[in-house]
Length: 250
Ligand SMILES: [Zn+2]
Image (cartoon, rainbow, N blue to C red):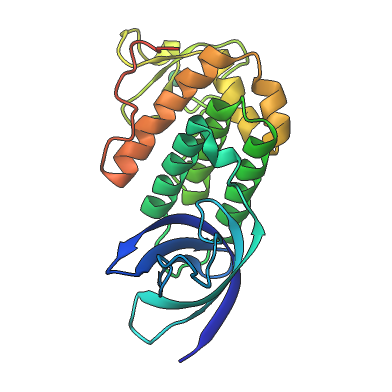
């Protein structure tokens, strides 16, 4: 039975039988891995507190051929999020992020860039706990981009013309943009130059620098995030909170 070792993030864990837990890891080298931690519910478990949510750990496991569920051998803690996760907003934000990762990343399919992006979001949120909506947006946009689902907001989808800096556009049902020359109807959300600036800046900056840029853009961030949630909902086939596009409650 081959043994594997890799750095991982703990995304979720739930009880299995009397003393065991099932733990979902997002691993650096092997993608999403679900495994059984034998005896993890016991008080004196050898796993101790290493299976806390969003911990960074070194994971060792065995995998039988054709079995999705692996057998967890050892988990060594390298970074704990225990203090951060005592804040309900932090817990909500990263539970949402973990949920999206599990929906997007197939089991045992490595995605190193997605792993590094998630880890960078976790580190930035830990350093700047007041900016969790901005971290959500950062994650949502990069998740779509890395999955190949991000629309092109630099040009009009109909006439293919590059949009000028001050141009206001409308969002189409395909989530691409339509310029004002290509349709006078008022259907579709208005996408302003401010929205497009946020959309493009996320793709140029690492999370800490994006947090600085976004610190005074609360309403615009929330509006772009709603559009992205609608795209994500369509991709994974269930609602993740992007329905209300007419009003943003802050
Ligand atoms: Zn056009």
